[in-house]
Length: 189
View 1 (cartoon, rainbow, N blue to C red):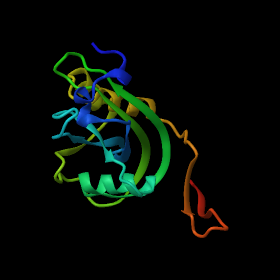
View 2 (view 1 turned 180 degrees about the vertical axis):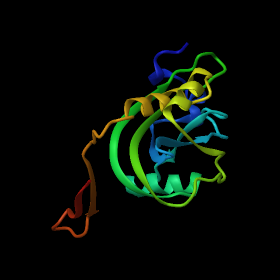
View 3 (view 1 turned 120 degrees about the vertical axis):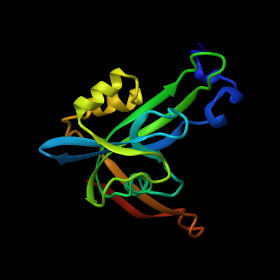
View 4 (view 1 turned 180 degrees about the horizontal axis):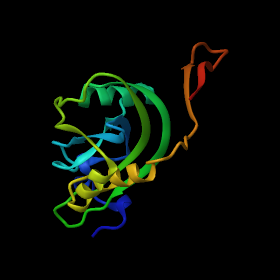
């Protein structure tokens, strides 16, 4: 096993990563039949192909965090959602277990969202389904859930803890006398 990812050759890194990939993950919970359920997607792409996972993906250049997570939920489940809170940040480093596996590095922004409307249905990214925590525990024991995603749900199961999230926009080099203008500095609830 290669334990120092900083020296892992580029050809052994997931998609030739040079930097951690910023990704958004959505904790989408809904009470169904008086029990809390979470929506997960059965991944068809690597990493973790074939495993149940939190909905999410790449954070696109220029997007706000809340727009990115709501877009990912809509693209993967068809649900329209509203950003609730940034619950945490996870620095996920994937060490290759053998010489045939690649390493990876992801910076995961864990966001809670509320469902506004729609039904969770399979889109182009894979099957979607609602699970109780007990059902997820069983799937985890069967190694059918992405391990880090299961631990994220377990950790944030009853949490109302939030991190400060600020959206800042500036205009750089507007003119020679003024190096920049701050046009937005908003604390998002």
